[in-house]
Length: 266
Ligand code: SF4
Ligand code: SF4
Image 1 (cartoon, rainbow, N blue to C red):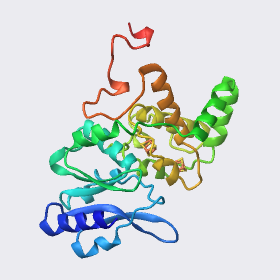
Image 2: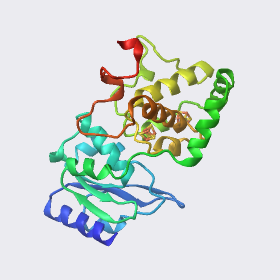
Image 3: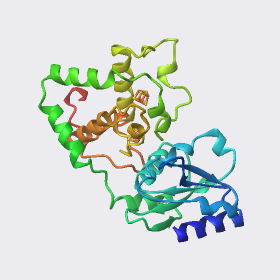
Image 4: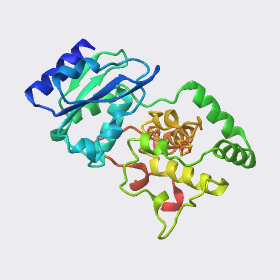
């Protein structure tokens, strides 16, 4: 952490960046995002296992953009989100500095997005064993049982959209769920409305979700909505050989290869 703080201070002192986005102590035992703009405030920065917010979500916020060039504290899920966002033309090497944190909590600075991409080759997305177990159980269910499982899990959702707000990949200026001309998704949080919202969201994130779990961590009533995106990750592995964020894109839902398994496309 000392190395990270030292570098953050240097960057702010020299004016190389205008803000360092990192983690700080929040209320209770929680951590929260910190937006450090003065060198003397870098002592607020912390990093430990409680730092699970995906800070990349702030890179697209107009309030953050208007401060000027940021440096961002980036453990692996944040690094993945940065590469995915860069592949979607959300930023380039010129408007971002990356203060990486390895899984061993070591500081590593990246000068180029391409270096992050190479580094991530050693850290491919792997669904955790306990989630895999749940997904396997779901796979073994009949269609009706699976439908009932999801209806029950999603029924408490009251559409606060905290999951969407926490997701770095949900950055559309206007979300489909808020359109009423035409209205694609039912507004109320009844059974149909909840199923439509969550399935639409999972498909929108297929081939883009970096499996950071920020959405599920943000849900005030602990709906396991990340199981849906984990399922799409597993399906992508079976059908397309897996997903990893790359600068050159080639997104699952927007590209076609002649050897894709989707026979109906040929
Ligand atoms: S859908 Fe959830 S797990 Fe996937 S990138 Fe967004 S916040 Fe992370
Ligand atoms: S955070 Fe939870 S309650 Fe809020 S919209 Fe998402 S799933 Fe529903």
